[in-house]
Every structure is written in C-alpha cells, then in structure tokens.
Image 1 (tube, rainbow, N blue to C red):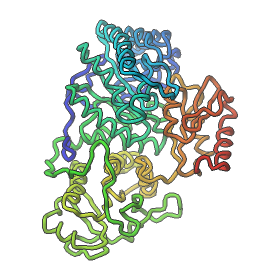
Image 2 (cartoon, rainbow, N blue to C red):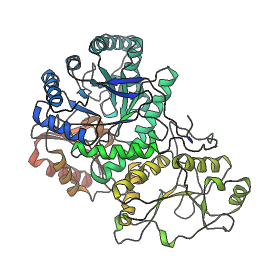
Image 3 (cartoon, one colour):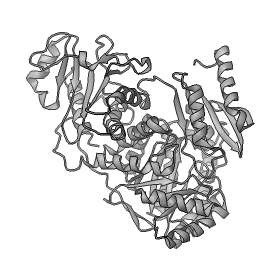
Image 4 (cartoon, one colour):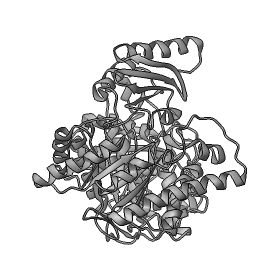
Amino acid sequence: MDIFNYTRRSTVEVNVGGVKIGGGHSIKVQSMTNTGTMDTEGSVEQVIRIANKGGELVRLTTQGNREAINLGNIKQQLLARGCNVPLVADVHFNASVADTATKYADKIRVNPGNYVDTARTFKHIEYTDAEYADELKRLRERFVTFLNLCKAEGKAVRIGVNHGSLSDRIMSRYGDTPSGVVESCMEFLRICCDENFNDVVVSIKTSNTSMMVTTVRRLVRVMSEEGISYPLHLGVTEAGDAEDGRIKSAVGIAALLADGIGDTLRVSLAEAPENEIPVAKELVNYVALRSRHAAIEASAYDGFDYEEPQRRKSKAVGVVGGDNVPVVVGLATEETDVAPDFIAGDVKVCGISSAADGDFVAVEYKDLTAENISRLKSLNDIVLVASTSHANPVGELRAVVHTLCNNGVDAPVIVRRSYDEPSIESLRIKASADLGVLLIDGLVDGVWIENSACSEEINSLSFGILQATRARISKTEYIACPGCGRTMYDLQGTLARIKAATSHLKGLKIGVMGCIVNGPGEMADADYGYVGAARGKVSLYRRKECVEKNIPEENAIEKLLELIENDKKCLTINV
C-alpha cells in the first residue's frame, strides 16, 4: 500500500441493473429509503427524490416476502415515470426473502451475521473444529442456492457486514475484533469465488470511524492475499445527523478513499435520505481531485502499522504532544464548550531558519532537507506546524510526519489547513476528509483550520473532527441510525428530543436505533441504547444489556433519563 500517492484500487466490474461499480468506473453514490416498502407510492416518491439529487442506486428494506415482491410494483411505477435507478433489496434474518428478491431487485444485500445464523444473543458458544466446519457447510449449501438464483436472474449481491450484528458463532470463535469482522465477510466471499460468481460488492460498516477504517484496510489486505478483487461499498453506520453526521461520515469514508479504496458509498444520515446525496457527491468529487497528482517521493516509517495505527510518540511541549489530547488552534469565543487551546491570532509561527527554542515552527514537506532536519533536532521545546498546498494534501502531510519519524524528530505536530469555502457544508466535508485520516493514523497532535468565510463555525468543526475520530471527547456522542422501513418510531424527531435532553452529558455515548437489526450490537459501543422494539414501543439498553422492554414511546425518553440518573447515583457509569 502506497500511503503517499493516490491510486484507485483495481477491482472486477459489477453490473447492478445497468450501473457499473468498480472496474475503473466512477465511484457511485447511493441512499436508502425510510418508507415502508409496502407503501408503494411513498417509496416511489422517495426514490425519485433521491435519484433527482444524483443518487445512482437506492436500497429498500425487505422484512418479508411480501416486501420483496412489492419491489416489482415499485420498479414498475418508477419506470412508468421515467426513473430507471437500480433498486437494492436489504435482507436480514430470512434467507428465503433474499431468494424471492432475486426476481424483483437489481441487487440483494445480505448480512453475514444473520443470513443463516440465528439472531445473536451475546452468549459464548463453544465449537469443536468439526462442529464449526459443519456450520460452514450448512452456510455454504444455503448460500450457493441463493447464488444460483442470482446467476439465473442476472442479479448482483452485496455482502454487507455490520460490526453491530456479528453472529454469536463468529463472536465466540474470534471475539469482538477486526479479525472476526473480516472473517465474517470472507466466509461468504470464498463461496462466491468457488462458485465463480463475480457480481459481488462488499461492505464492512461500524459506527466507530477508526474501527471501520482499520477493519476495511485489513479486509483489503486479506482479499488481496486470497486473490479476491471485488469492489467495496463504504459507509459509517449510525453516523447521526446534522454537523456530527456529516463530519463522522466524511472522516471514515474519506480515510479509505484517500488510499484509493472504495467504489460506491452511502453517507448515512438520520435525516431525509435525499439529503445524503449532495454530501456523498461532494466527498467523492473532492477526493477525486487527487487523481494524477505530482508524485510524492517518501518512505513509510517502519514503526507505523497501517492496520493498527498507534499515536506517534512525540515530546510534550506544554499542552501539545506527548500524552496530551490533540489541541485545537482556533478563534476567540465566549462559548466554553468549543474554546480552543490556542487563539490563532496569538500564535506566532516562524520559519525553520529563524526558529529558536520554544517556537511554533512552520514546516512543509519540501523543507525537510538534511540540513533543516538537523536544525530541527537541535532545537528544544518546539511545536511544528505542518501545512501543504499539494493536490494530494493527505499524502504530503503523511510524508511530513513519516519523514520526521524516520529521522528521529520527536517534536509535536499541529496540522494547519487553509480553505476558501463559501459554505460551512463544503468546509466540513473537506476539512474532515483531510484531517480525519491523519488523526486515525495517529500522526498529529493538533488541528488548525482556517477559512475566509464561516469563521464562527471553525471551532465547532475542529472539535467535531477530534470527536469523530475519538481522539478527543468534548461532548455527548450519538450513535443514530438513518432509519428505514423497519424503523418503529419517528426517528428524526426522537433523536432531536434525546439530544435536547442529554447534550450536557459530555463523554456519554447514546445509541438511538430504529429497530433491532443493528440496535443491540451497536449498543456494545454505546453506554445507553434507545431501540425500537415494536410500533410505538421502545426498549432501553445499558451497553449490551436490555434493562427495560416495550416501554410506550411517549414515556421512553423520560425512562432513559431516569436510567442515566440512577446510574450516576450508583456510580455504575461515569457520566
């Protein structure tokens, strides 16, 4: 993997209803309806809104055979209205529904965690090697039947692993680990290869951006070792809404796009699904600007682990570097929750030639000559401020830090990025795309964002990027699904009310899930969970444990607050 120079990963081509994914084709953007799939008119209208925004594929939930069959009616009405966007059936818990969907959908997404394995119970199950082999044989027999139907109908498949819905079988043998997530996927991909079925798209998603990125990196390596080159679908699941949802999605997705990984993507927002498309398109277009950039000649630091990156060891200079959380250089504000560590106007940055002990020192990759590196090593208590104007900013900033590591320079590094974006929406996407991967890779000790407009948003954006990478926690984190036809309540309105009631609980992670498909599993990464159990009913979780079932929706937020308050009194969870 060349981490300095941008090149798209080579894959086979997959045909989804006439839309080509992988094989050198442009990165396709997609979304998913949140209407009930039996609501034909509502689903048709929503698909058209998504397509009109530029969505190139649309997924719909198919809880049962009747929903799968109704995809045919939805497709017929779309064609009558001049909309030929491919439809994807989203299948969980029922392999026979996937079979039915082959007749009506252009692509069928199956979840390895619940395709043939029973719904997870978070219980450890001991398997002998023979017993485990028998389980894999049962999986193969059932999945081959499905693949044969897909071949006959000319339909594509997405193998879509969600960290939150790994089976008890996988969890028992591999644990809640990246290896387990990858193996859950590879079990199915090996069958596809054995059956010479190549119309396959692969995804691994989680709400934790760092785990999502490093696990996909691992998957790409394992696929390559086994000679598999299926295209990849990218997304951060349960990203949330508004600023947080956009930042989190851009951080996770762009960290992979930066290395040429990804052939189609969805930005999952807890909003109207058509809102996802402009964000996705801007992200794709921004990263695509790195194509055919001037080559960056750099050597990776031997101590850097691409699949399990650790934070670079740097010298602490005041509050910068060492074991300190990454700092923010920003603008003066009276808002204490987004107050930067340094005010930009107060920070004097000098060049290497004039630098003295204790200075903030500007550095670009071209500055790292042998002479300048020697000078930097001779100075004490300096903070390096790295910037770039290269067409591939991530590649060159990586080159700066890796070169410092290779030459034993342990001064902390703040990354300074300057933009000229007219809207906060564009600034969020670009800054998150540039800075997020550097934080996930553990390369930097602070961020400094500059922009000619939207200056009042810069502090919030900076802290949001740190939060999205979990490099620095400064507020409540919401792990919120985007909703679909399975959602059991008004997800967008409920999320807004939960935010209003809990936003003061800094550091707490609260999951807001529309149904049980990923709900309990993603709760493993949350302190508390609010999960749709039935129409008008909600279950509450403390991490993986369901503590109250089937609460009337009108009482559920109050019960959630009571649960949190009681835990605070008992010191069960530090909030």
